[in-house]
Amino acid sequence: RIHKETHKRDSDIEARPNWPSSFNLYVMLRNFVCKIGEDSDIMMNLFDAKEEKFISESYVVKWGKQGVPKDIDMLNNFRVVFTDLGSKD
Image (tube, rainbow, N blue to C red):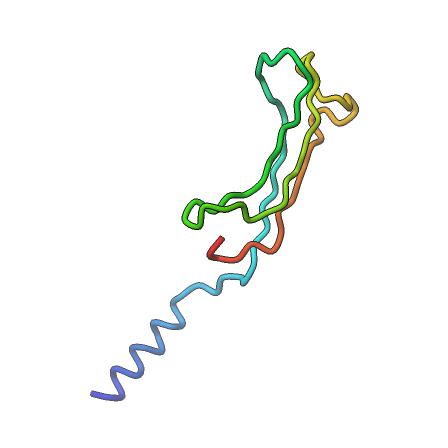
């Protein structure tokens, strides 16, 4: 009986997937639609709802009152990678 239960536990461990210890999240801002009438900053960061706190630094995009990025060359090219996210994040 002991051998059977030990063998069963070993097979359960092998069946679990091997998850990486950290993750990365890639975010790309393509468009932002809002009638604001003045220049704005769009801030992106990650928030932990359970802990009720931000868990990343802010990524800021400067948006013009005309509805396009302040730096027009960056249109469709705003990208950020949030790195070193653990499984609890």
